[in-house]
Length: 573
Image (cartoon, rainbow, N blue to C red; front, side, top):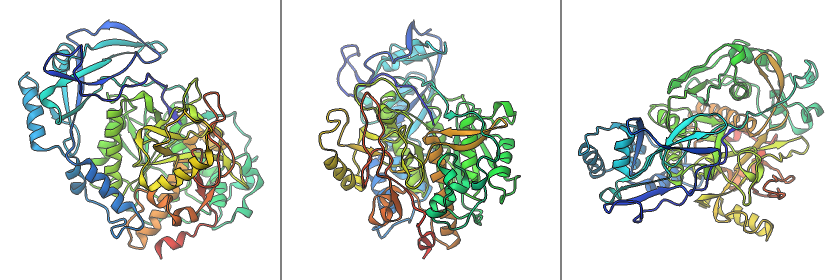
């Protein structure tokens, strides 16, 4: 999984007078210190142009949440009766009063804003550093990332006019610093062709007894079909769709996909391909040497598992300023589509303390919008156990984002067969930003009772808990830049589970039924847990501890995975 380095802790958003703010200003956000890995280079040049985004206060986010839960809860009469694009936007569009207040403020300073999101809850402005300082009392500074030498302009705190409270939610990017990649998913030395030959042949409706022993050391699509009972039958519905995100110059290579299909899904045409969408200057180079390890993994295990489901690689370029890969831009891109994909998977993320709570909340609400329209959203939970996105030094457990968002599905990792156990790297825990949602409150409460005083004081027991589901995440075979090898990480788990849901959607659509949409209320229901395999062994160590132990029932390591006995046909009955 591609994750970002841990940054400095953020203070909660405030609306109090700041000793540094002018009398008519109130401080909006503040970061306590310069993030680790950055150094100040002094005040930013006053003439430098900044591309700022203004988040306007949404008119009814609580109503959006209620609508999402209404269409996502199996016991609701409106279950899977999804909202239209226009109905969803009505919850988040700012009031006309808010739009007028903010645009009038900008006009008074000679600044014209452009619309930055489909619902109009974001505005974009281009201003000089001098203008930004005058508008938001931000003391914008140039910072250098010591490892890469890259420079950026940010502020440790900023304020907004008192008259805009209740209208201007926050300004971005200000206190959220650019986040830099530590590493790619783990990639082993190439494996000899033939070592896994007994698991290359795709199966039908198999059982756990049919899983070849070699799947314990090399995981292929055929292993997943046997382990999880995934049909090899090709999907039939052209209206179905599976979206795969790509960032930071990670390119999905067609030649690698062809090699993968030829070796591991010979029942599928080796010419099977994927559609491409780009934004922010994104591309998808087909130079073999530039093939992205993450992108290859994600495309191979969506196409290789979701047999025949139309799959789109969405490449986000570096021409964005949202501070988190391009998460803002890609979600607004999808929200702007009349028919976004029914399933969307992402193998990237950040430590929750690396972004501001305001930005996290806004992104989370954007995922709620997609979910209310019928999209199942999956993110890898992370590869650092309780220490966050990746292993590191910490004194308290580090939750990851967006796994802490209650409106998406966080996917943890498992390893082994007969039985599966939790992968030790699988990130899991409790958000410090978001409270425990009602759909998981009983399961989380039961786990906390079992946990007792273990890890007391190291995590927030009232936070949104994750992951929500799990899938194989170790010794997964891929092709990259012409090489055959194994990868590990929850980067494997998210596309595998997403592909499985895409196949379920194909059956539903073929039967004239809507797709599954936001899955969590179902996953935590009695029907959901009955359809899955409980992962009861393992832990996710970190921060000098053993982390959380896996137990019967929900746990913040890996929870349930798919069951080979799952009755696919029951979904369309």
